[in-house]
Length: 277
Image 1 (cartoon, rainbow, N blue to C red):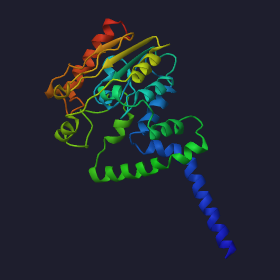
Image 2: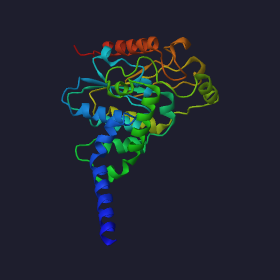
Image 3: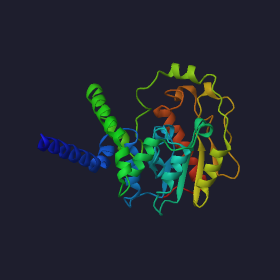
Image 4: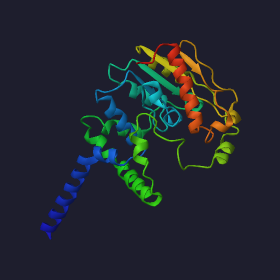
């Protein structure tokens, strides 16, 4: 009986140790929202980064074709300004231009990094700690859920959405709540710009050779008290750029809208001589 108990305990410990060992691979294999962070960090360490990158949340991820900017799209779902600042600190020295896409909710919400995203950043480091590996259990669940979703929906594009550093989606994010339901939820929303968010942008711009803040387009039905370009920052206000037909939902542009959004950013970069050859 004692021998069986010892054997069972040894098997359990071996399995746990093996899970902790492969946890960094699991976060990459899962292809969930956080695994895109690994793609971004791996690209930063690749030595092949272009001189410009785009940072922001899903509005920039699905709305900016970085190929037209001679840049990489380092946007990720629900990326906060705090997370953008952390990713910016990982950029290689040859990156001289950062285009920061800023949405209205970002300026009114918290800047803290999502715990799952923070854990993904740690797991994607060259030598992740034991604590980070242990906290990465949620990526196992996310990986299994993603696998089941792929099997049921037969969605072959999910890996590409995570891996593509230029234009991760053909139009807008799939699934989620119906646009009209989202409009109803946002109908009475009031976004008050917080000084802490503006200070984060100033901190991000400090020490960066070229830092361009882009206020993302806002759906015409939601243009109540839109944010203005903050002082002391190089900023482009594109909040009124797109028409209602150029939005896929209350936040994300259609492909046509994304092309106009990208062209406007390109024009701003061209005027500032920020486009590389």
